[in-house]
Length: 376
Image (cartoon, rainbow, N blue to C red; front, top):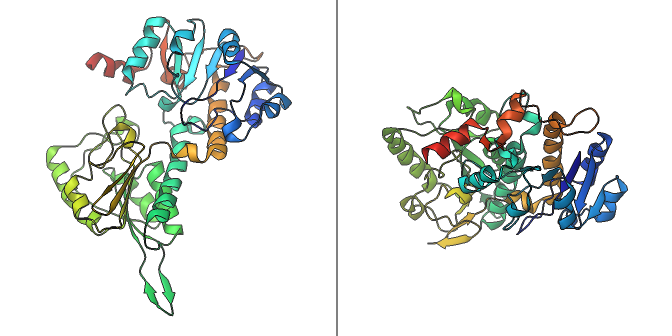
């Protein structure tokens, strides 16, 4: 098999594979073509890739010769027209949200795998890019909030008096939220956490956070650990409680998302109105609408002294370790489709391979994506 590693586009600084992971692919008898300059923003030179057995070539040559095309982001504008129906495209392209791209892949007969839909099972944990990248996001969100906040995070006992610790509210206790709790606590903040899933309460408390209780949440075991849509009655109780806690918080970190849907609105404008000047909101759900009504993706909004930072790609601010983690996830997944002699082996009998496949032979393979497209 010939694997083509493409250079990312736009503001992305990560690369899907660092040289250390490329070495593991060459050990599996896979030939790796690396687009020239693919790793430069992640501090990996072309010489580094060549030292582990890869060939650095032009972008045109990658598209012309590779059997499998790999990058982190969806295809750049114009790239879908360059992908042949005999090739396999692997990236994280959010197929539950970007159904237009899915339909393009479908019409062209391209085989595609979206790494953000790897099944969240015990066996697939080592391939879960969402968890890996959420770890980076949760960590970075707290550091940016601490830098932006006009007060300290920890309590200080000084000759000039006592400095009270910051109050942090974290919305959503998935991987990003849990990392945000751990980082906030390490910095000495008081942390409160809200999540509709009661099952996460124990994890929140084990990290030193206080769980904000709102009774009556709907939970669905079939949702694979994700949050699900709630009743209007629950949403009203939830909103009142969140508004109450947010008004007393110095920092709010928003991480709540529902796959394939607009992010739930948890911090309306009136809640921001009640927050203290100098407070900071970090919205990790900005790319899908944001948990805060005033969020703008990739922008910082200043409203009545409150800073609202819409940031959905913190991993790009830590390109080396983020690339390292992403690449290891990719390697673990691709081992499932690499044969003993390095050949491409699309084993759709494997539940992880089938669950991650979006399109193949002009058919939709992923049931969740199929249901979204059929509904639309």
